[in-house]
Image (cartoon, rainbow, N blue to C red; front, side, top):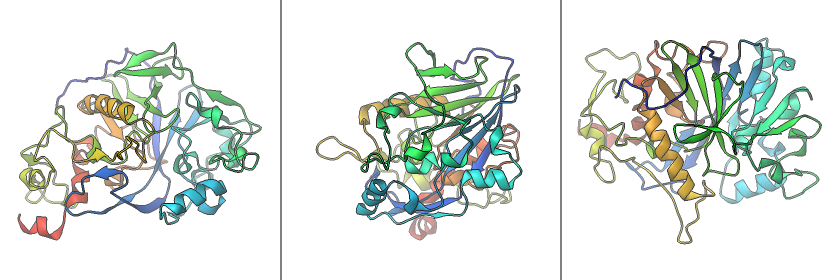
Length: 365
């Protein structure tokens, strides 16, 4: 993996403190409506969700995504009906983000803004639990979804999430560019950017947080630009290595003797046996439509840009539902700013490959 950054970010002497919050969502989802082909005979994947607390030196605190509401049935009825029509089973959600913060001693009045990567139920949480002074920040076009339920009985969004609070729609028209994405400098000092990352849904945004200044390091919060690391890895920028260290199928605390495996183990089950192409492609029906993406072409353009960013050793890419990172990351109140020293990128890059392992594949090695 390259040691230089492929993300051309202007120099800044400002950074933010990032903490990752485990939003306690646990559920499985079927492969076939999202990705193809089935790899290693695996038909279902486990998913979780991350929320991010961003703290600036000026005292402002932001939340990027909120996970889900504890009671799935309390979402907009039209949304609940639609998901159940796909055979969706209610997820297990222990606590919502507001409760996690409150029980951890955070005064919710100190949260200046909640930022939605997008408006889907497993990212919007329950904004009504935050004071009316907490701003809601959304991507371009999202307010066109108003009014929410119950004013609009068929809306997938709840009116209580935005009504009576300041709401800001990010305008990327005059934004700068980072990594090929239109970028909004949130604090105006280069410490935290919102990125226009289209494809998944209307107004989808990702975020880039500067976690150190010299040398610079960043966390890229990908939202739902893709739903599994196998959609953007391997790539021509991050090829599957001949020897994978650490082994994705070994315990994280494995001895050096056990903590590697041959790349051939996974190359053999790769659909194209290619070390430079992702394992998964987006499912598209005969009409060119996709369940997880409203614009497939834009989604692939976004993914291609992320693949270039993923090459950089000083950028940690975290997708909102990447369960393969669950046991590698540290969670709030611990800061994620030491991610480089803690080796999260080297430990996590190929961890997703464990999802493809079956007893039959393991037996070959």
